[in-house]
Image (cartoon, rainbow, N blue to C red; front, top):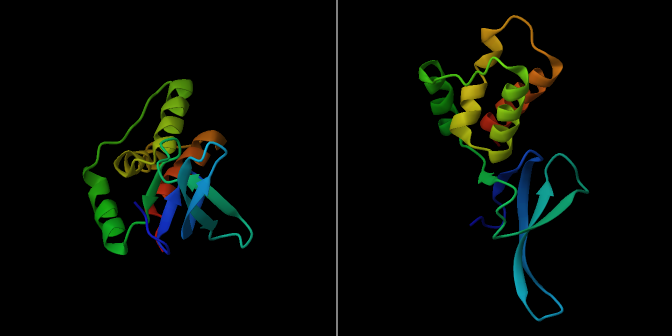
Length: 136
């Protein structure tokens, strides 16, 4: 569970700050707890997401030390590569949606293994890099 003032990576949206944790009541008197997130690159974007959310991956922002460890592990990591463009794009999209750091890191070396990148592949690799190494 996150705390107020934590910085988190919210899905593929980007870095958000937890500005509040609130409880909302519904017509049937059920209460649900929500994170109130402020997207840090926009002053007027607020996101409310249930604390028990399972659809959008959320994780704490990595520390500089954690990022350094990930970068140092890259030469020893297996690279995820699929020759079939359609299957590769589907797999990359799936990995990006999970926010799984270890798999995101496995995507980033792909750019060095091919001579020219399609615009969609470039987009996937850019998102993987940003998602994996985003720090505050």
